[in-house]
Image (cartoon, rainbow, N blue to C red; front, side, top):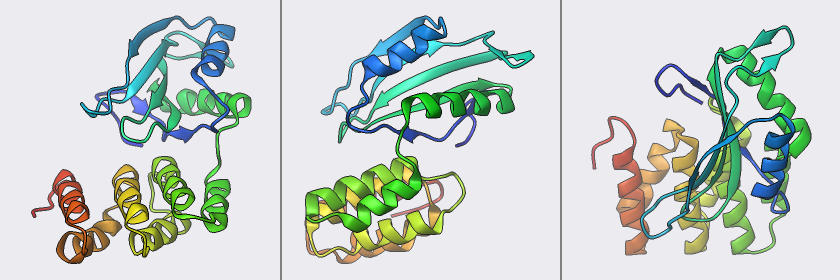
Length: 207
């Protein structure tokens, strides 16, 4: 995941359906991190739900975070929950994120790939693609790329629609040809529009 201002941001870790904001709050309270902001999810406005806990000055081994925060986010469109950390220095933020992973047990990329492979119906395939897009490592991951690419070419329009968002979540430029094909050729107008909008949101892509 890229930086926002001078703060390092970890990639999202997608939470299992049974892991709720209450579990994340319990984890944060155990470390005495105060909750500092709450944003309500608004699907119509495209606003993600988000709860933030402040971890500035938290000790990690013999060092302390200069700045730090834990973010619990619920995707505006699909309601998928995930966590990420931001802060400085980078190494300590990554260490802290690993601690949260051990406690909250989010999906691994490998588990999400298996979930996609085992999906028995369009809804399950679309959901698996969305989770993969959110959980995608910053560097192009071939196992993620292949599966979302397959979803972009799925015979069911619902899966293609979900996978356009999944490609957007991943930020992989390698999906641009797939998205261009949907924007130009898909039989569904709403999908052509969605793919075109996604391309416009990617840096340097003109539609």
